[in-house]
Length: 101
Image (tube, rainbow, N blue to C red; front, side, top):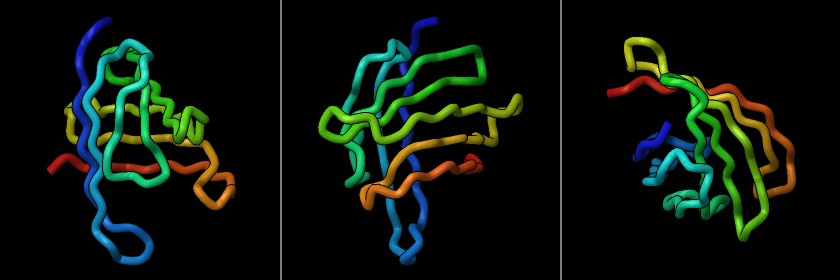
């Protein structure tokens, strides 16, 4: 399945600072630039089915996280399960839930 994905994530980090991360790419597994996240500079995405895709984020060519993102049937909720290593070298295993505004 081909297609283009444009993602903008807005939120507040642990220090209470607003943040925004954005990328536009294709579901072809190739690296595309991502902005707004100092820990990541590229992302690649592959569509698994109509509501699920996998993403790999890199910094300076090194994989820092892998995630699976699932969109609810009504298109209003995205659940992200991510594993990786943060900028401090600490491993993480997170489940994030985003509501579409």
